[in-house]
Image (cartoon, rainbow, N blue to C red):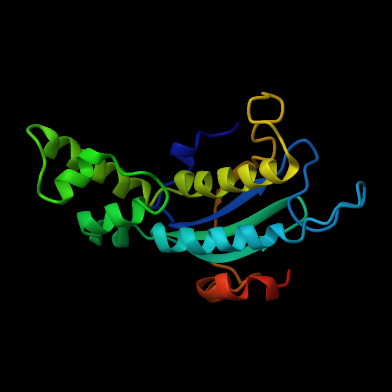
Length: 200
């Protein structure tokens, strides 16, 4: 029986998780599609660049990765202590790299909060802090990006229900132990400069 992710993920038991993202509808993620003859190898660059950004935003460390033709594997470590050690301003700075920060929070950060805004702003920052150590949010920020880029490249119309985010991978998450690197995470720190030289 499948367990809800809220029950499956328990950092107190183990901070290590093996995440698998699969394409749907026979969509190709990376490499050459022998059926159509199209080469999607450049898409690995999207994934590595996105992983590099997520490594700077989330307090989730990438231990290993493998990008395949229609799916990928990640082994991640949830660093909750790091999330808890961030200041409120650091949380806002990280979150704002992926999402728009409400004007109310910006006013509060600058010390110009209006009546009643301080409590709401602090609750939002606490929620963002929790999400920065949340595997589900990490995967969401990776998968939605991949899906949108692929749909844009393929000329899919987001207004059409049958094509909208058609490449959004199905995600499996399992507790894991540290394993040898398939991909070398330290290179992700500079992959924006070396992206075209990164081999499978």
